[in-house]
Image 1 (cartoon, rainbow, N blue to C red):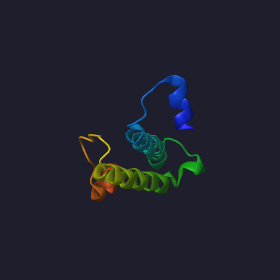
Image 2: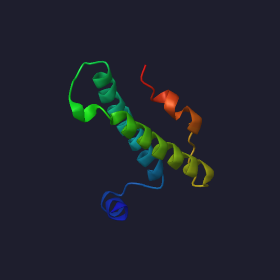
Image 3: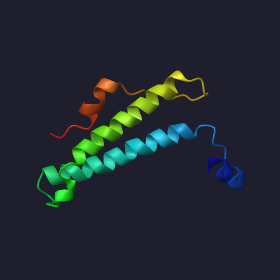
Length: 94
């Protein structure tokens, strides 16, 4: 699919992995915001009760992907690498 998109648009997708990892982190942030509202009692939709588990899962996927990309020589400069041990702190609910 990416090859077809690149061919049709002429866009350079050599650094697409960065944007894929970034998208996973963004999704984790959105879910964390929803879970935080649920946790604080600002919404009572039972579907939100376990979103914290999804957030952790997405953060682990993104962190692991970032670590793989950081070790590959693909010409990317991921200026602020995340440390795997910091994932839970980044997405903790107070």
